[in-house]
Structure formats: C-alpha cells, structure tokens
Amino acid sequence: MTVEVAPEVRAAQRRIVSTINASGRLNADGLALWREVNCGEWKATAADISRDLDLLQVPHTIVTAFRFPLATAYSKAMREGEEVRILRKDLAHLVPWMPSMEQTVADIPEDAPHWDFTVFQPRADGMVIAKLALSAEWPAWSKKQARAARLVCAECDYDLREFKDEARMPFDVRLPERPKARRLVCGQCCNDGVDEMERLAALAGKPS
Image (cartoon, rainbow, N blue to C red; front, side, top):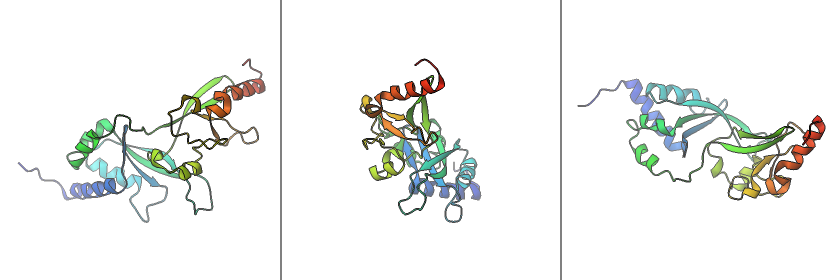
C-alpha cells in the first residue's frame, strides 16, 4: 500500500537528498552538513536544512564548527559555520527518504574518524582534555589546509591529525606573550606538556 506524502514533505526530501549527496560528511559518529555563517544568499543555511529534517522527522542537532581559512582570504582566522549533525543511531530515520543511506552506513570502516579533534591542555593544576570545534571533514583536509587551521605542530610541522604515535599527541602549549592564542605542538616537542604545567604552576604559586 502506497502512503501518500504531503507535497512539502516530498520537496523537503528532494532538498535533503541533494544536499547530502553534494556536501554530506559521514564518519563513525554519523552524518554532518556544514554551512558557513551568512551563506543564505547562495545556499541553504543550517536552519533551512534543520527545517527540512524536522519535516522528515529525522533527529539532529546544530553545532558551531570551524573550517580552515581560505588561501585567498585577507583574514587568516578560521571560518565560522554551523554544522547539522545526525547521530549514527538516528540515520535509520533518514533511510525511508534516502534508501541508499542504509548500505552507506553499513560500509563505514571500523577505524573511521570521529567528529571530535581532541587536544591536551596543560594547566597549573594538571592536564585537561579539550575538544576543538571543527567541521567534521577535518580528517580529509590536505596538509596545507591543516597547517592553515593550525593542526600541525608549531615546532616541527608534524601533522597532529595522525594520532598513531603516542609520543606525538597534540598539546595546546601557548606562548606566554599570547596566552589566548591556541598553539598546538606534538608531545615530542613539549615533553608531553610537563614543562608547561610546571611553568604555569610556578606562576600560580602551586607545587608542580
């Protein structure tokens, strides 16, 4: 028996399928669709995508996420955007509208990357684990793009997205003269953040 679908729902289906095919990013955590802030003049915004997903009754969230700056841009600041994310467990709600998604999800490799990019932040009272608000496509960026996003070691240029060498995990070790500017270095170049923790502890008058 064929179920009749309202015209506005069918239109939402067409838009969502087209958007996912054009710019969807699938990984171990689920599906993500990034949109730069103020992009509404030339493509659907995150809010537009969210409204369509609501019509299709697909659970999702919108988070702030950043991409590398464009090489031609005057500003070298990260580009702010909003990312619509659908958890992997909720992709089943999308399958009736996009049947090919079922096999696509089944084919996700076991070692597929996740949304989060995790770094260690030395503090005066110990080490803190932080997550950078990056677009879900960060694992696919080129080395040049990763460098522009400051995801390579500031000392030796090692690509910190590798996560294969435990001696070269990413640490956020900031310059004393620029304490608010994120500066990632590998563990090999910063003694796993120990030296920075001791420096900060000394400034704060705490035993290291």
